[in-house]
Length: 231
Image (cartoon, rainbow, N blue to C red; front, side, top):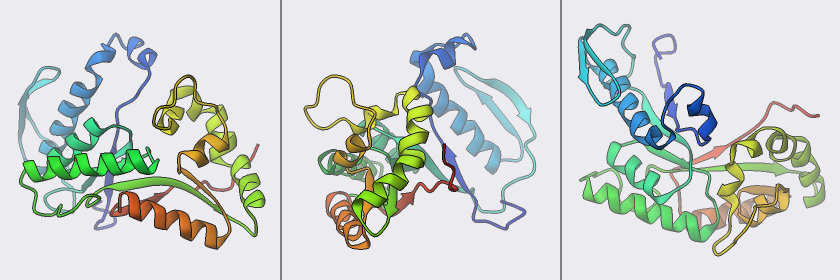
């Protein structure tokens, strides 16, 4: 942030697999509370010259964090891979921008409404309608035909990347449709049906983006673009 004179954006998240915590002898059930406390410490360290903190998980006296960020009071905060209404509400209260991976219009609309209600209860004047200060995470592939775009997606993160990494960490749950039961298939079709993967011609993508705006109208479109890796 200081090297670039801003605007650095700070992303945070809470991991989802129990074994990631067991290895460190940490209680999986405490992950959200622990993450929230850690973030409070980080923000406090950005804003104060001397930091004393006595919390449930961390305690210290008169820490001297340096250097301070260039932006005042601190860089903008984003919550990555956000899934639930509870996360949307928490982000609204804490003035953190949730980047929602849940993308089905019904669920996206519900999350946007939850975020708006919590922001209003917290007295935030910058959130005047659902979708304000929220992000929508999407993967977009544009080609001369839908089939060609899907082939590109299959060689990139939505196909190869999700099958070899992200799927093993439980994130296909984001593509569960309303009322859907059982396991979520690890397919591009699951992503398309959930309105997460946009693959097609320019006109196809324009229609899909219009659907997103109609459903939840997020302030930020977070387009997850890989650097062209392939298997």
